[in-house]
Image (cartoon, rainbow, N blue to C red; front, side, top):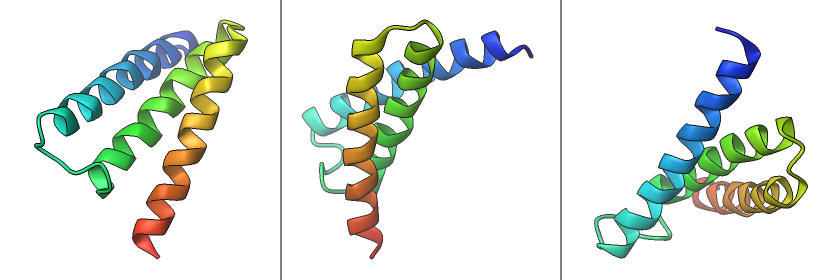
Length: 80
């Protein structure tokens, strides 16, 4: 697989993961303070940040870097 293909896959995964997290919380299938929700947000935002950076789309890249940082702090607070 080429780097471009990997970035596209990461971007599509990111979109799906964030939507899945939102849907699961909205329908009360998972809790917003749970590890699953936070990991979906963390990995989803990282995937979207990667594809955004590769396309030089600064605004969505920055948004998703911050989103991932918030999710990382939440994951660490759950684990510690």
